[in-house]
Structures are given as C-alpha cells and as structure tokens.
Image 1 (cartoon, helix red, strand yellow):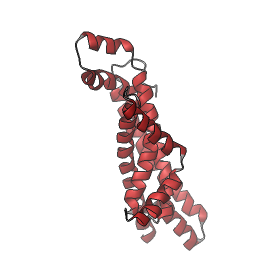
Image 2 (tube, one colour; image 1 turned 180 degrees about the vertical axis):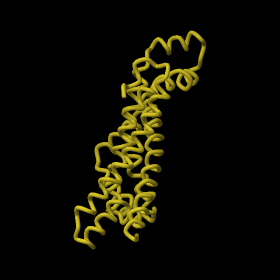
Image 3 (tube, rainbow, N blue to C red; image 1 turned 120 degrees about the vertical axis):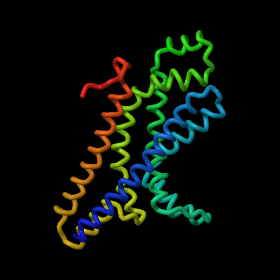
Length: 217
C-alpha cells in the first residue's frame, strides 16, 4: 500500500507539472506565434530570437540554469515552478511555429472579405483569422502536449519526486527493474491516453463547419 501511495503522489505531481506547463506552452505559442507575424520588426525580431534560442538549447540545460544558476543571482524559484516554466516555455516555442503556420494557412479571401466589411485588423484577427486557424493548429499542438508529458521526467533531475524519480527509488530498493519501469510505462501510457482523448474531442468540436480540417479517426 505504501508503494501505491508513493506512485499515486508521484502521478499527481507529474500531472500537475504537465497541466501547468501545458497552459504556459499554449500561452507562449500564441504570443510568440502572433509576434513573429507582426510587421513591426521591434516585435517580430525579439520573438524570433527568443524562440530560436529556446529551441536551439536543451530543455535539460534550461532546467539546470533556472534551478541552480539563478539562485546565484539571488533569484530562487521552487523546483515545481522551475519544471513548469522550463518545459512550458520550451514546448511553447515549438508551438509558436504551429500557430504561425496555421494563421498563414487561413485563406486570404477571408481577410479580404473582412476588409470589405470594414473590420479593423484586430477584429479580423480575433473574429476571423484565429477561429479559422484554430482547427488547423489543434492536431499538431495536441501532439506537442503528448511530447510535453514525455519531457516531464527531466524534472527528476532537480529533486522533484515525479514518476521517474519514484520509479528509480523503487528499483533501487527492490532490485526489480521490471516492476518499477513496467509501472512507469503503464502510468505514462494512461496519462498520454487522457491527453489524446481530450485532444480528439477538442479537434472534433473545433473542426465542425471547417471542411478539410478535421482528421479522420
């Protein structure tokens, strides 16, 4: 029972980090994706530099910088927050390309029609472009959420007792790697199945009325 309790707490911690990082990833993806499309280079250039820097460096190293280096400058962040921030920003930067591509894929005829209706650029973006781009960005973004879950084992390196951390401890205590890592496989598969299930429902709901955007299941 104690083992089940430990794995239960570890599953909750992993789910908590996954959820927090997913929210941050979506926010980052939208902000960075829209900023990269801006005609103002003082907005687009910093966004491009930010995205390329985080995509070009390891999430592993980013975790260590936030957790071990920032305290040297007097900035201390809890391990859970470090995990959420590092993973969320990293995955969000990849997601920014999904957002950018989906927006660029919106037919130009829709934006031209918006101009004919005297809609402002902001109204066109929020009421025409994003509603049409959202169904297109959902499938790849949902795939990124599964990748995000599979990135969370890195947080075990900064003393967070997540699933991987507890699995390693159980293996050391029992000397039974089959049971330890078998349990991890089952739990991670269960968590990823939940994400996939939610994603499919979102895809179906968001793609209603948008022919060609709904994937066949």
